[in-house]
Picture 1 (cartoon, rainbow, N blue to C red):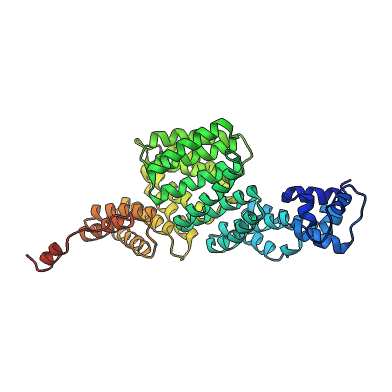
Picture 2 (picture 1 turned 120 degrees about the horizontal axis):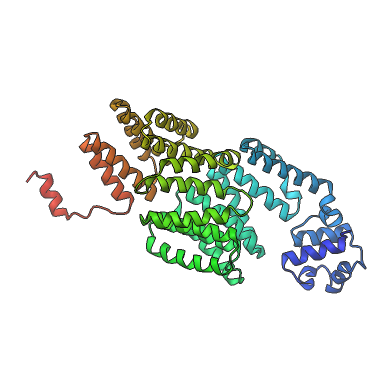
Length: 441
């Protein structure tokens, strides 16, 4: 049976403390040694001091997982995880919000907060997820718990990416990677997953040259010492780099490799999201492969319903719309686009603008030019509310093509100009020329 002595020793080692450091000014190192040897039974007052320094609780040090509060909290967190897996993030969030995580061990508290952040993310509440993850990361770094920091940082980088704050995503990721390098943890699964997520941020920020170099370096590291899970993450994000360089053939090869590697382990969120990305590639390759894309989407949908977010499911709807349009079925394409819009609700999002583009395409194929024009205009209005980044620039570029095809030259010119500006290409016309133009000469 695990005793108080065992739990104190295990918690001390997990915290990276020596007996002298744990003793501090309150005890002698020999007293700690006697406790861990089972030769001295600490009082509740002494346990309170030790628990505070170990990131634990008196209850846990005395009773372990069998303590009533610890056991109840763990059970509630497990139920919340099941609710997330069952596609009930609102119920999971409510369950976790009722818990007093300040009264349990540090490990259980971190697990509960990570699960709560995931529930917020699934509901599209990125600000709430970030508000949980930022303090968690600061605490893990302060305690020197590098693996915890890597797990938290990966979720935080992903949330900042989703929110479009690319500078902060890179800053958080690179700082944590430096900590892992310093702790000789380069090549661990947590390192590779975090590094490959940061790679995505570089791509979105437009640093393709560096991202290409970093992707090659990560592939080398992953093949040398990485597990299938870590290698799969690297190949997935290397595919994103190749995709943005318009090398769709290489992106498909990397994606197929990632699917094979991630398919070897337990099914999680990564695999269905990767299938969604693969479908995106298949629909933009030359020639496009809509039948295979629909197959990948069909395989992704059940797992995304169980553990994904409404944003991810809306992306599935948009890609299904594109696939059906390529298969010359504009009725189904319209239905899928409307499903995406319904999922996203009224909140201004880049994804909503992209879904309106898909709806406009389907309506145009049905010869509903007026309806298509309304959808395109709606997309333009939505994009006008978005912060500038590469994704919004790409959406403006696509919108410009639609306006041009519809004969709206002024709308096309405005959309192309917005695309260039949001990609970082600003007007550089000398003032003297602008004065001449304004004078009508």
